[in-house]
Length: 185
Image 1 (cartoon, rainbow, N blue to C red):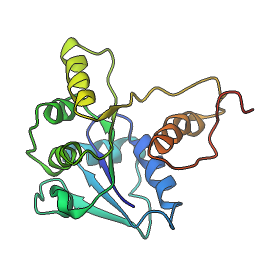
Image 2 (cartoon, rainbow, N blue to C red):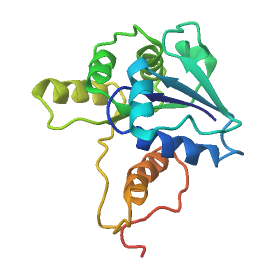
Image 3 (spheres, rainbow, N blue to C red):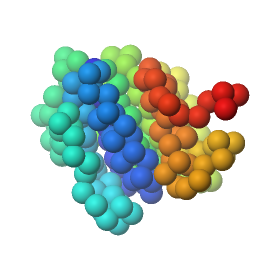
């Protein structure tokens, strides 16, 4: 499986870091994790996490300005894309079909190829424009996944709280996780 992970300038880099880390653990199932960070996404990552990207054999970085990267074409055969965190500006460009950078072009490719596209939106409250953009993406086949952690698993720290979102995303993509399941504990 070839995955695209995009990180935009919304707060919540911790979600992207944990998703990348967990995907790297699926070595036999993941052939490539294509990582795209917007310029602001990199700045927010540095500010919030103060660390570099996770080390992983299957992780390959692509620059957002590079529209010649493989994921800009449906023929490259990527299986799914997660934009985590997804700013509402990026969501709006995706909803409008504006593929002016590698993140938005790759998302457009996922929608046109009918492949899984998950946008982990980090914004509150939502305006009507945000809700309409979520509606458009959902009707086009994408999945809007608010970064809303669950508390019923009684997380002990921020990492366990973030886990509740990341494990649900992995489940949506078809991966088995050891995460908390309602009624199983």
